[in-house]
Length: 114
Image (tube, rainbow, N blue to C red; front, side, top):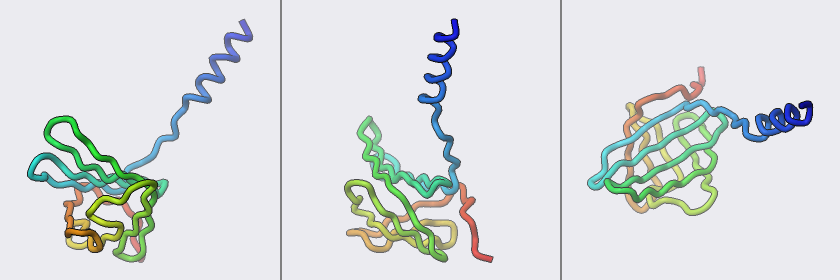
C-alpha cells in the first residue's frame, strides 16, 4: 500500500506542470488564417501563424522588454516577421523582418516603468 502511494506521489510530482501566466496576448486575422503572439510571465513566448485548415507554425523562445521595445530570442528558426518589435497604440509592430507585421493587443499585463 505504501509503495502504491509513493508511486502516486512520484507521478503527481513528475507530471505537475508549472503554470505560466499570460502577460500579453495579441493577434490578427491573416488572409488565410490567424497570427498570434502569446507572452508569459516567465519571459517565454509563442508566435503562431495558423492557417484556415490545420497547418500551424509555432515559433517560441524568450523575450526581453526594454521601454516599449520587445526583443525576441527564438529557440529555432525566426519567422519572417523578425525578432524585434515596438509596442505602440495598442499594437505590437515588428520592425526588423522581411515585412512589417502588426498584431493588435487583446491583453497587456506587462510591467510598466513608472
